[in-house]
Length: 198
Image (cartoon, rainbow, N blue to C red; front, top):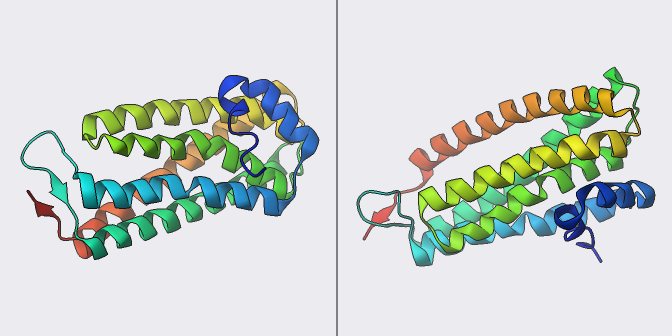
C-alpha cells in the first residue's frame, strides 16, 4: 500500500525510519506517496476558499469564485510538488559533502516522509480561521523538522552526530526554499486572485 508508513511516522517515528530504510521501496513508490499526500492541502485549499471562506481575524470572510479556487488548488499542488523535488535535490546534493552517497530514491524518501506531517496539516482548513491554521501548521512544521533529524542518519546510514549536521544543513536550505515559495505565493495572489468578501 502506498501510504503504509503514514501511521508509523506519527506513532513510532524512529522504528518507522528503520523500516523505511530496510525496505527502500522504489523511486516510483515514493513518487506515488508524495503525489497522493500533496492532494490534501491542494483539495483543502480549493474547498475552504470556495465553500467555507477564510477568516483572517478581522472583517468578513474571504471567498474565491469557482475558477479562482480551482486555480489556487492547482497552484498549491504544483508548488508543493516542486518544493519536494527541490528538497530532494538539496538532500542529494548535500550528501556529497558527508560520508553518504544517497541515491535519488533515498533522497526522495527522506524528503517525502519528512514533509508528510506538514502536508497533512492541510486538513486544518476544515476550520478556516487563520490563527487556527497557523497554529496547526507550525506544529506540523516542528514535527517535520524532528522527523528530518531522526531520519537523516538512519536513511543515509551515517553516524548520528554527522546526521545532525547534515539535517541542520538541509533545514537551513529548506527554510530558504520555504521563504522563496511564500514570496512567490504572495506575488501570485496579488496578480491572479480577486477575492470576494461576504
